[in-house]
Length: 152
Image (cartoon, rainbow, N blue to C red):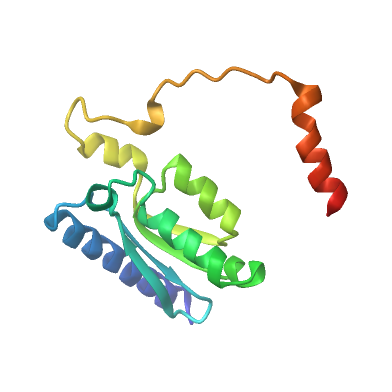
């Protein structure tokens, strides 16, 4: 495949993710969608955001597909996957994508571009202020971790 053919294929995959996001928005869901493609170029899974219909704040399409990849493929096979998504993955999804071992992510809209399109005052969950306190109880908290690693 030439570079221009690869670019056209990439554009086609992104266009599909954007069209799926549009369908999701028309159905009342948040406007995000993704597809997972293997090394041979076959779409192995698709997902749309279902946060609204399920009430599950983690039902982002990237997370759904990363979980699917990790559950159905070897670590080596996950490295060969590409996740095409309508919008740049959020922090939560980035972490799950990394833990699943997906090798590549291609997105159509950046987070910065998304923020410019959203109306003023739209909540930004990744910017929420959360108080974290710790570490504490090291002596006690280290025990389960040591037990786990000593048994592996």
